[in-house]
Image (cartoon, rainbow, N blue to C red; front, side, top):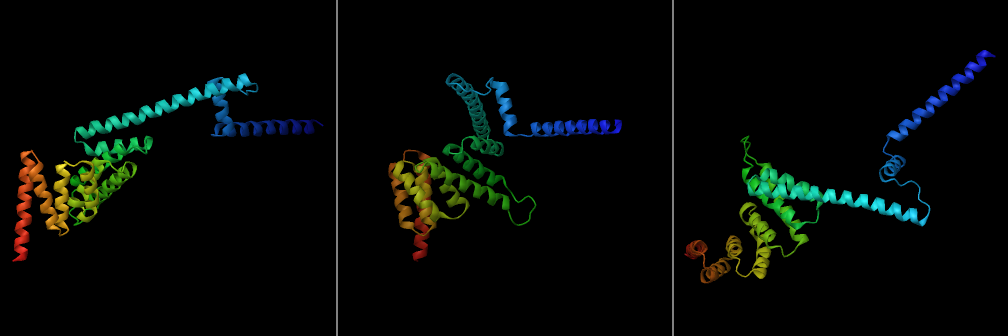
Length: 251
């Protein structure tokens, strides 16, 4: 008889132990029930039933959500500020890291993508073939990143001159794909008639694809309209080179 009582008591203790262990395991996991309990403890909202209780619950949870969103927005803004500070200091690698982090908070901000494009373009200049392997995959990766970032910025804002110009620089001077730059530069010229920096790059693009007449025409326009001495001299010098090569080719 004593043995049977001991057996029943032992079984009961074991059952309670198993139940307690199961409860601990469930409560430790990130389940919905646990989250709900934490919310109830934090906000003081249990199981609302009346209209008044429901309205109070909505108000409390909404305030908490607003607090979280505000905090997240501040973090995203801090990443943007850090990125611009690093960029101004010409610390383009660190700037790139912070702009990338900011994009996680603001994934449809064209300015951030433009900054990524600029940083990646600068970093491609610093990505040398330090191992002397004869290849420079890091430089190509940075250039591809710059291209994709500018394209995303333009996708978000099709008339974003800064991104249009930056992408054109990559195509003309880095990737040797001037034909891709021409439509973007033409759009810049449509938006800003006196953007002489973009016009000089456009003339270079036309010259690179064999359309010297269009290049000369653009240089003549710059010479007649530009006031800046450096811009004038650059246009005159480039025009002379194009004409000389055209003359030599004809001869």
